[in-house]
Amino acid sequence: MNYLKVFGILMIILLCIAMIIAGAFTIFTTVTNENDTNYTLSEQGERDPYILLESDENDIRTLAERGYAWAQTDLGFMYYVGEEVPLNYEQTVYWYRLAAAQGYARAQANLGFMYRNGLGVTQDYEQAVHWYRLAAEQDNEWAQANLGFMYYIGQGVPQNYEQAVYWTRSAAELGDAIAQHNLGYLYEHGIGVTQSYEQAEYWYNLSNSQTN
Image (cartoon, rainbow, N blue to C red; front, side):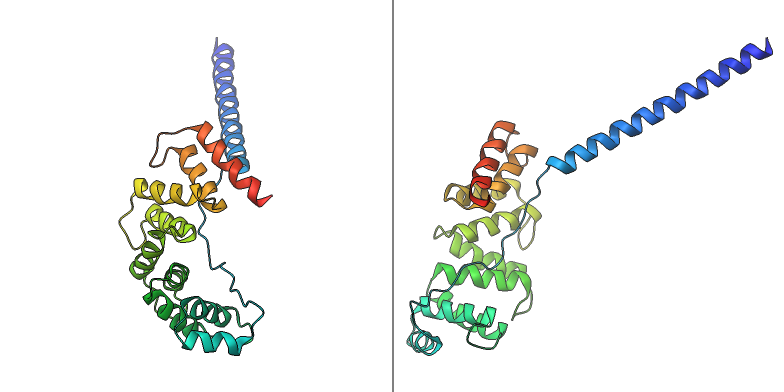
């Protein structure tokens, strides 16, 4: 009788161990698969190249000093990358600000980036959102994508997934690859939209077709 009790107890213990192992394997498999397939939102950085039009730094500076917004923006970017001038983020901000004040969307977007990352200015998320928004409202897809990201993480604005979707979609429809990727992520996880794997796949594929 005692042997039967001991045997029964041992069987119960072995069954519990087997269930724990099986559960751990299932969790590990799920996490591994998710890590293989999940996407995360990403923010874009400064990427807008200046256009020298076969001109040198002196020509660009002359035009910038005459008030041409595109030249001011290009000169600001030259300071940002240290091309033909010493790298100087304060000068980058100076020239971007002059162009942004004229309503030049590319400069507004780039100035938002500088505030977002605290380059040449004190980091200020609200100012970043301010300049991103001004550029986004002029259909600058780079600013729209970044503004959507700010709403997604609640930086400089209250977190708002619907606004994140709105601005991300605007940029995605203008052909921005990162915004298309991010919109796919939002659809995949049902963030700010009704979950749709079909829509997620659609936007992921559009993004991938531009980056592959």
